[in-house]
Length: 85
Image (cartoon, rainbow, N blue to C red; front, side):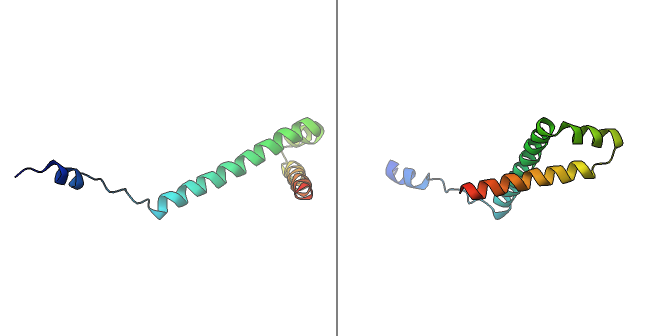
């Protein structure tokens, strides 16, 4: 005998459980994206506030002054943010 109520119960789809790998992958991609956004923002900020350092670094081909300035500007921004909070 055909019972439509029984068929509906059997047609319930189980939810697929997310694997730990995919959640970790998305977390890793998010962290890398956030890091890239911070570096890009700091580079633009450095270009606007200290163009001489950027120009000298590009002219000489030496990136250490640029990296030091970037690290300093990111550090200063974090200190100001933590003071604000």
